[in-house]
Amino acid sequence: MPVPRPLRDRCREFLGIDGEIRYIFPAMTYGGGAGFVFVVTDEQIAVISTGAIGRATPKSIWGSYPRGTRIGPVETGSGASFEFAGAAFEVDDEYAAVVNAADAEIFDRDSLPRDPLPDL
Image (tube, one colour):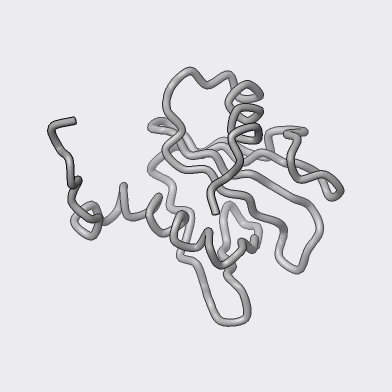
């Protein structure tokens, strides 16, 4: 399920991003609690806190990391979870592929599918 455009736009405005957002996905602290949105651009990985109640409004920047920082790996089994910057996060299963794709783009480009329309 893609992140809704209004949340994407709020994150873009909150971070002051003019360029492309490569990947964006919601997460929460492992076991529930605070919500976050990971925003991956060509230059950085920004982790935005959305608080515990509403998960659709950026509240503060939890951290900003160079794009070369690995996000995963995502552990699956009893839910999808990963450790990042010393904290444990969980994502809905459908976003595990987004985390893996963000990492593969930097660390394993050969594993990504070829662009079906490279001339566009």
